[in-house]
Length: 345
Image 1 (cartoon, rainbow, N blue to C red):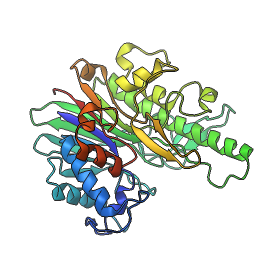
Image 2: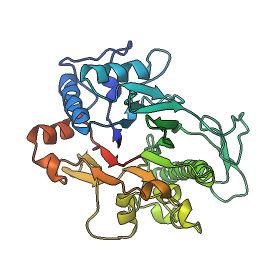
Image 3: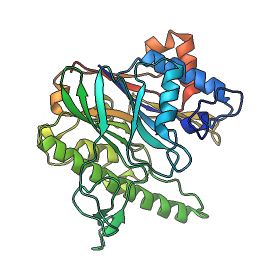
Image 4: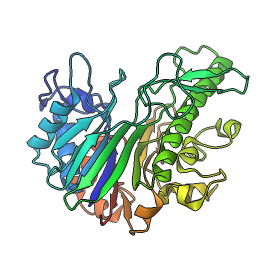
């Protein structure tokens, strides 16, 4: 089976309020990209992926005016995708939902949140992801109240052959220091945002440990937007969100670790070649910056099945480079590239 995580930049802009696909010449949310061109590119990419399940990061919006599931299912129908059934979890107000597209002939998937709901006072031990988490962020003996801006999507999945496993789709992201008027204010806001992101990683890790303790096969996938060497504030916190989620750098048994080969390679190198999953244009420097942001992490039992990972990077993956139509589509579709994992279940 093939599992994919894919952050689709401004997917929401390709649909109207009824979830109908906007295949026209209007501008998409992507810089200088028309809606029809981004839509066609996404059709090429999703068709090439031919996935059993795609965790869509930054999926179409879900609020009082729009709904995620019809939009994604209309998109899948337009391009006749195998993965044509969609589910969404707890919604948010960021226009960046987390949703799953899957092949209902191969998989049965449902949103299955764990943890107890909380009131405004929150809880300290892995509350439900739409609740409030109590944690001391800055070691001042005062607990802070943390919420997910994008609650992770928890999925209970079963194959047509009866194999069961869990999936968690996550998008952990620090807020940019908008409104800052000085370098000190930028630093202060950035550090506060990073603290909150790390608290969310601790919260997610608590849920992961619960599943590992229960012996569940687990896949954690998505955009963690934080990793070794990503920014200058990393040393202040000891471990990145990626390390926290994986269990790296802590005294845990081997069975409590999650594994992703690209993350593992990055963690063992301070300099030299690294994998990348995203490409951003830096206008002030007139160049592109590449980063490793997207992951598919698996528990020990799934790793033992010999999964094969692939980053669909148009310049780094020979299979993508050799097909000009796919290579161009990957660049037009999003500023992130899909990550896939093939595994026998």
